[in-house]
Length: 271
Image (cartoon, rainbow, N blue to C red; front, side, top):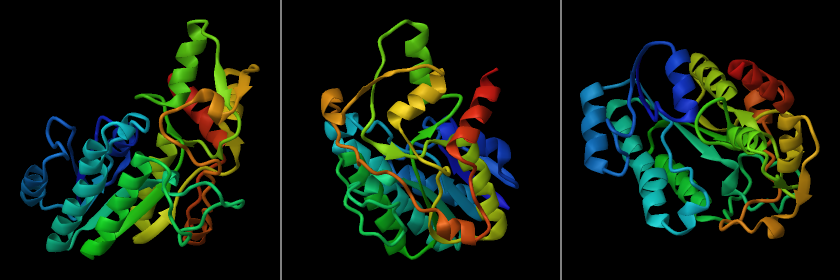
């Protein structure tokens, strides 16, 4: 199986390059900048993949509020271009999306058919990417995940460790609920989806639930000061409830471990 992988230098892309089965052509931003549609078309037509795994994304949630057009190029427009090329080749396109397509007002975990209502520019661009893929009519696998972190890159887990090592005061919001999901688990889950031939829209996140505050305390193994989202004052609004219902994926035979087990695995990688 010939696979074209974007975002090899990202959290999930790094892990995917090492776990995907087949002939993988992995690209980074220098080799394939998703801001340029013509470059995307050229690279896909050269590679002629059977599967395109798009692990590249604009993920700076707060910065997207001040540069939404840049975020839209990468998260909204580029997936549509990839989808058009996948349709032309008869290839499968794998795309990652986010819990941020929802507004967080639902009391229960979100299912795939719940109505999206993103609160942020980032969420709107990711939703546009989903819709562009579906509109293109290609074979696709869209995986919505949440609170992604891992042993490399820029993420909450590494930020907490660095801040603690520098002796900084830590203040973490306790009124946003979700399931921290590791890049390692996402990569393994994706590979299993491909082995089983899954297509469509699925939620794929860790089992269990916690707050950012609870996650911080689990990372550091000590108490951390709890604050509200309003006190933190981020530029982009986040959903209060980021929990995703993974029943559809479980019914297909795939389930990611609970977030605590994933956290321990990431710890082991760093040791």
